[in-house]
Length: 223
Image (tube, rainbow, N blue to C red; front, top):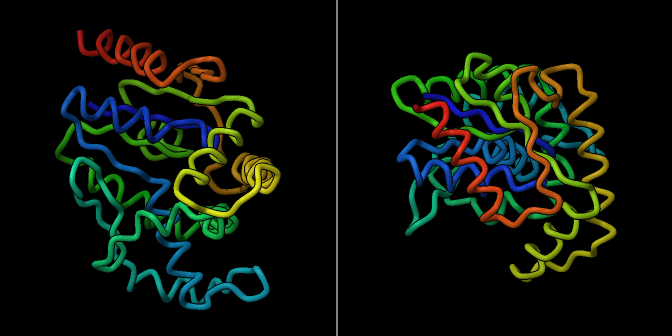
């Protein structure tokens, strides 16, 4: 079984996907972390110049980028070329550039191929921007998650402050708005709700309320 969870940045997609995977003993694949890992590699290896991607360098670098997911304690972490980068890829600097990386066609093609291979022999929960529209258009369950930009920014701000990052609410709010625009207007696999996806606006829901609602959706498909 394949569960596709798409939606805007910082709307709780990953939290929901991880919880559903644990509940039903499915494999969880964080596609956003994969694009963030590529972005981190690009930043560390000077593939950006004056804020713009050198696509020739990026294309050449893809062959040297190996992304894995490994369990660390109770959590699944993203590993880049043998290094745990889970904390690094969540920082605001990576957030500034990840939409540019994810809009590059050959990057998406490579990531989609990897994602399909990961899900070839298992039941999976996968979250991202184009899971239900591109990666798994035949998914048995598609959920499109959203919330107001203000609420998403507040949640992200509180999360980063808890981790000790020195960021402002306004910086995060503007970053989210810019990412929403980039994600929904890019030429390759733009963010959109699949025709058969169920809309889940969690602006006024707790994490538990969202989870319980989604569990019922999964159970209805299983039955």
